[in-house]
Length: 291
Ligand SMILES: O=C(O)CCC(=O)C(=O)O
Ligand SMILES: [Fe+2]
Image (cartoon, rainbow, N blue to C red; front, side):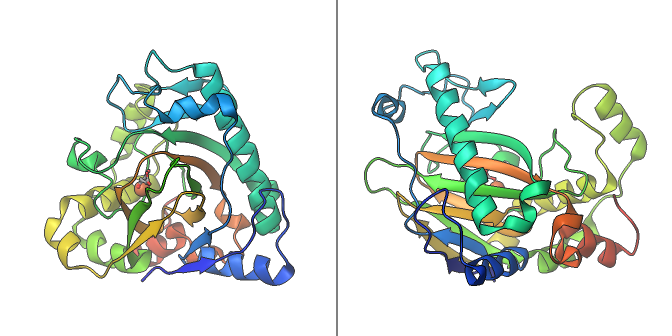
């Protein structure tokens, strides 16, 4: 069962003590959630309007995503894209400095992924089962293969009043893989090549990415499993930040509104214990190389 450990840093640019750094590294790689209960994200005065529905999302997308080169995508017309991009850039910088102070051995290896602003209430959101994050899942991105790299995500609840972001945490990756690999379809290299050629995927979907997507989908599709598997609920209050390897910590987001998230990718070799990666676990269970 995934657990949370508290880290008492309250500044984005603070350095953890050697003890905090060692505890954070081990907990994270063991599939726990690092909770920073006193680390919030401050909005500038002109940014408060973004939480008043100005960032309404005409496309029906659940999140507004941001990348340094492409800028923001998915925002409604009423939303000031430049304002949002500046906010996302600041959040990305602050998460990088937090990771540097807490997990210094990762710093030189982190690759910046997408960020997101999440202004839409989760509860009652209408979506397909595959996109339904209220169901327990491990993260795997259909169009952005990681090719084995870890998905390290930082979230902050920025709700202006008191609404928590409520998550469920489920069984560890090893157990999820044991349950669903036996029914997983085998990868088809020709299909992976076609998807890349058609630009459905941004790079080659490796056998690793294929199996991660299979686990993501099989887990969300299995309502009996969702109901009976061990899980516990945790509420992240406004003004709190949390960090997880979301490719290995099974999770679901039940309710909440207004969060920021920044994704970082980490090569497996940069881990203190690469044998704890989903790549190594899948390779052991399938008894073949996947990356
Ligand atoms: O929005 C959230 O709190 C998390 C949703 C989720 O599971 C995800 O983005 O992968
Ligand atoms: Fe997720």
